[in-house]
Length: 73
Image (cartoon, rainbow, N blue to C red; front, side, top):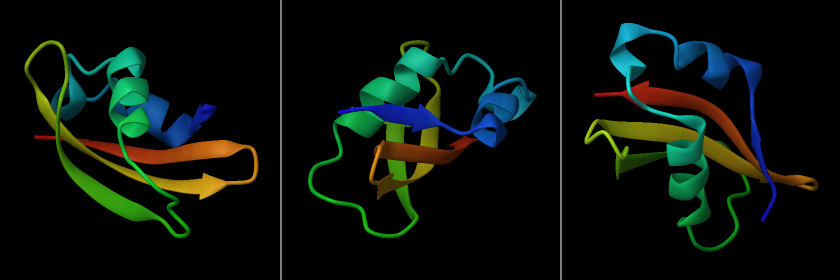
């Protein structure tokens, strides 16, 4: 599955609330979501390798799975 991370989500990774969450953590998390996501949906309770918990908003588009934003806990 091809994962696309928006520029908005990449910028949020620089914020203190998303500290220690990596692109690799996001790709691994979004890849575990089964099925088709027709509209932007928030998925909760993922953990980065650092132990930080995060949520993400994603949806499926023709070219792959789009990660719209990341919300650190």
